[in-house]
Image (tube, rainbow, N blue to C red; front, side, top):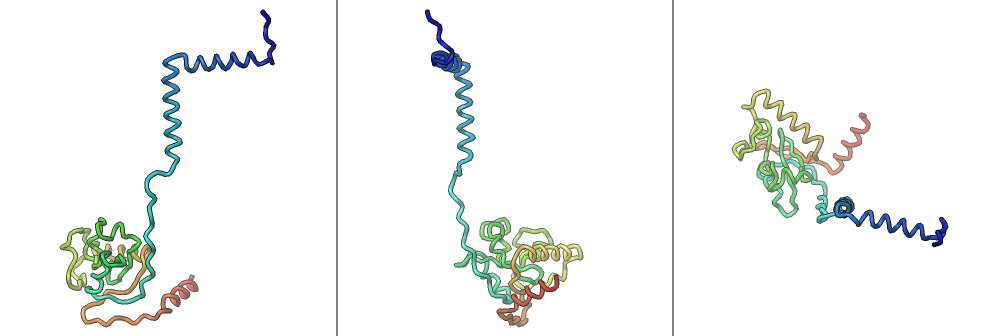
Amino acid sequence: MAESAPGDGQGEGSLVMRIFYELFGSPLNLALLGICGFLIYKIVASRRPTGPTITKEPELPPLKKQDFSLEQLREYDGKGSDGRVLIAVNGKVFDVTRGKRFYGPGGPYGLFAGHDASRALATFSLGEDALKSEYDDLSDLNSLQMESVREWEMQFQEKYIYVGKLLKPGEQPTEYSDTEDEEKTDTEKKAE
């Protein structure tokens, strides 16, 4: 019988056959190959985008700066046609529409929508009893609670858009000009 030369191709064929036999010749190796195949599939499948893509709600145009009575504020509870959500904190009204998941209908703080949330935030109360139906001057809060309200006010100022003030009974609304926001922004930039 003639021996095959190292480069004639028969040695390579027997090498492939030996590897094939080693991989598939034993039940243990078959089980390990199955596990490896499954793990590779899971890795590849996890990199593919799954589930429905989240569609972002169209952003509402900025609300014109204006002052609000409690009755006017209640209209912005997120249930209106545009879905806008306003909350008053310490006499200031903020547009929290971009935080609608928290402050809108069904959100964990949804009861604040369209209300003065100052007392509820000061007392850490999520009950409807903390929301008053008439103007609340917060005069019965202690100094610690008032400090808490001021801290909440600062957080809202940093995160949300200030749209006006909450009017006291009998108070007249301020007339804001269309350019007031632009002038304020320019003044703030010059101060820095």
